[in-house]
Every structure is written in structure tokens, then in C-alpha cells.
Image 1: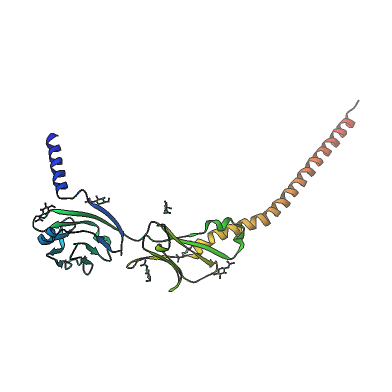
Image 2 (image 1 turned 180 degrees about the horizontal axis):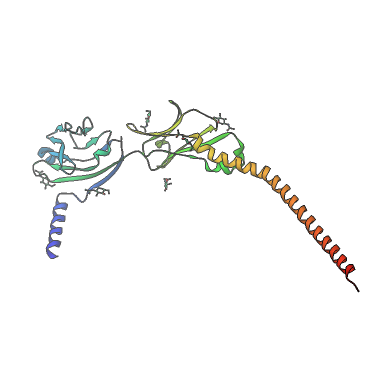
Length: 275
Ligand SMILES: *[C@@H]1O[C@H](CO)[C@@H](O)[C@H](O)[C@H]1NC(C)=O
Ligand SMILES: *[C@@H]1O[C@H](CO)[C@@H](O)[C@H](O)[C@H]1NC(C)=O
Ligand SMILES: *[C@@H]1O[C@H](CO)[C@@H](O)[C@H](O)[C@H]1NC(C)=O
Ligand SMILES: *[C@@H]1O[C@H](CO)[C@@H](O)[C@H](O)[C@H]1NC(C)=O
Ligand SMILES: *[C@@H]1O[C@H](CO)[C@@H](O)[C@H](O)[C@H]1NC(C)=O
Ligand SMILES: *[C@@H]1O[C@H](CO)[C@@H](O)[C@H](O)[C@H]1NC(C)=O
């Protein structure tokens, strides 16, 4: 136990000496550009640095004495045309990042291979937008209109545009920068009978996600309920009323008839009884 404490302490010592107090966690969306900031000292510039990526710590960029080299010719082509390195600061920029670029990025000094900083980058897909029917519409009194109000939304996103398309033409659009929330939504009003193809698209500069609108599925659920509600309350109530009146009349008639016939029978029996 004491030995282990010693080892941990030793590691922490090395860590703090090397200036690495823990990795910087960065979460980005696919298609974004990511800037791994660094500010090299004169000594580090002379000695040179490496940027390394992944579990095998593969070098992806190198810099020595203001001369930079990009290793984007990996066999898998993973970083092809995506890397930029600032020859004064050492800052690395990854453009149009993909989910396969998730992992650890380490900047090390060249001669001693000591980590100067570690970036833990997670790349996630843009979420597919969700189309819902305006929930107030089904219950509101204006629901008698032949229109269906829809809302397309996407949650927890940054630097994106959200748009409605009718076929290939843009109907409306909103951008994340217009708002101060990470949740974006955009309304659309369509007629129930509309047979055009509508879609809601979320995009950043390099990627997009599409949700196609199914008017039948989204709009008619509520309108069918309305029709059912309307017709039951109108016709069925009348029928029910008529039926219950008829049943009531019949019941009263039967009771009256029953009482009368019983009385008659009693009378008959009494008069029949010999005194
Ligand atoms: C390499 O980095 C380590 C940790 O920051 C530092 O102690 C060492 O002096 C550096 N080596 C050179 C040659 O700059
Ligand atoms: C990077 O961060 C993710 C999310 O916090 C974490 O699950 C993962 O273990 C980290 N990776 C490393 C090597 O630290
Ligand atoms: C975004 O939506 C989620 C889920 O509805 C919610 O938890 C979160 O608070 C919302 N964030 C903002 C900034 O409105
Ligand atoms: C119904 O939607 C159409 C567009 O689809 C719009 O032109 C019209 O004004 C809307 N009508 C009502 C009553 O909101
Ligand atoms: C989304 O795509 C449109 C058209 O391709 C583009 O003009 C817009 O800048 C993109 N949005 C973002 C946030 O990059
Ligand atoms: C639209 O929704 C309806 C009802 O849920 C379904 O029967 C139909 O297959 C859907 N159409 C498409 C193109 O997904």
C-alpha cells in the first residue's frame, strides 16, 4: 500500500513537472472545426514538438524551428486535408472533424517525448431533428381549421442551422447564433390534404441530418380524434337520448301496466273469493 502511494505520488510529481494536470475534455459535433490551442515557448520551438493521436500515439504533425510538417498521408486517410498547424504557437486545427477522430491528442516535446498537453476529444453526430405536432392545437378551439401546426426541433446543438424544405426549395430557416439557447425549433403550417414532400434539416458547414415529414402520421392522429369526438357528441348523444327516452317510456309503461294488471288481478281474486 505504501509502495503504491509512493508510485502514485511519483507519477503525480512527474505529471505536475511536465505541466500536465489532466487532459482537456472537448466535445464537438461532426463537421465542426476544432482548435487545440497551445502556446509554445522559445525553448519548445527550438526543441520541436509532435502532435500525436490515438492509442498508438501516431504522430500527425511535427514542428521544429518554425518549420511544420503534417502527416496526413496515413494509410487510412483519416486526416487527409484536415490538419493545420500554427507555426508560431503550435496550435493544431482539425477541420471537418468526423466521429473516427474521437480520441486523445497529445502534444509532446520532440527530444524527450514528454506530454505538454493532452486533449480528449469526443466527436458526436448531429442529432436527427424531431417533428412534433403543436400540442396546443388539438385542444384549442381553433382546431376546426384545415391546417396542421408542426414544430421541428433539435436539442443540445451549437453552430447549426435548422430549416424546413418543401421538395428541394427552402421554406424557412433559423440559425443557432440567432438564439441564446442550445435548443432550436422552427414551426411549419401545412394543410391536412397537402401531398408535397416536406423535410426538416439540421446542418453545420459540413454535415446535415434530415427528418422527413409524414403528414398522414402526424396530422391526422389528432384530426381523426376530433372527428370521432365531434361525431359522437353530435349524433351519438342524440341517439343515446332517443334510446334512453324510449327505454324510459317503455319502462314506465311496463311498470304502469304491471301495477294495473296486478291490481286487476287482485280485484278479480277478491271478487272471486267466496265470503
Ligand atoms: C521537454 O518537456 C519537459 C516537460 O515539460 C521539460 O522538462 C523538458 O525540459 C523539455 N525538453 C526540452 C528539450 O525542451
Ligand atoms: C475521454 O473522455 C471520455 C468522456 O469523458 C471518457 O469516457 C474517456 O475515458 C476519456 N479518455 C481518456 C483516455 O481519458
Ligand atoms: C433543452 O432541452 C432539454 C430537454 O428538453 C432541457 O433539459 C434543457 O434544459 C433545454 N436547454 C435549454 C438551454 O433550453
Ligand atoms: C394554412 O396554411 C397555409 C399554408 O400551408 C397558409 O397559406 C394559410 O394561411 C393557413 N391558413 C390558416 C387559417 O392558418
Ligand atoms: C447550413 O447549410 C446552408 C446551405 O448549405 C449554409 O448556407 C449554412 O451556412 C449552413 N449552416 C451552418 C451553421 O453552417
Ligand atoms: C406515414 O404514416 C402512415 C400512418 O402512420 C403510414 O401508414 C405510412 O406508411 C407513412 N408513410 C411513410 C412514407 O412513411
